[in-house]
Amino acid sequence: MDNKKQPVDKRSRTIRTKATARKCCPECGVTMRRGRTTLHFERGGFYADVENVSAMLCGRCGARSVPGVTALKISDAIEKLFRAGKDLDMTGISFHKLAS
View 1 (cartoon, rainbow, N blue to C red):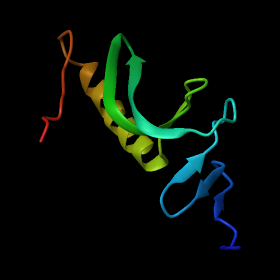
View 2: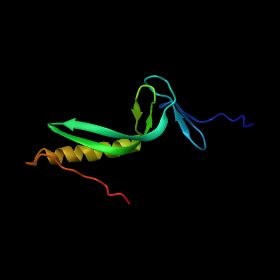
View 3: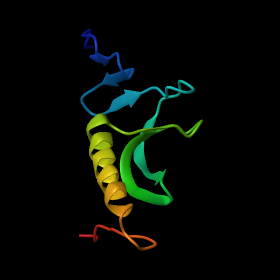
């Protein structure tokens, strides 16, 4: 039996193990599970959806947690999209990654 303490990320209440990372939901305390989700953004009469985002999901209350690096990349891309879109005279833009 291994008596070593598991490393704990105190900022996110995550317990790291070799195979998985467990994270407690910040809203209800239940262990979250890895999954995929869609993020929805609205600003200035426009909206954008980012689909198939890796996240930790709570099965009890529905809370979602997107890893910091991923969240920053998405936020930067969405900000650029909204800035570019405000000067366009059109109703929408669709941007999709093709399945490989």
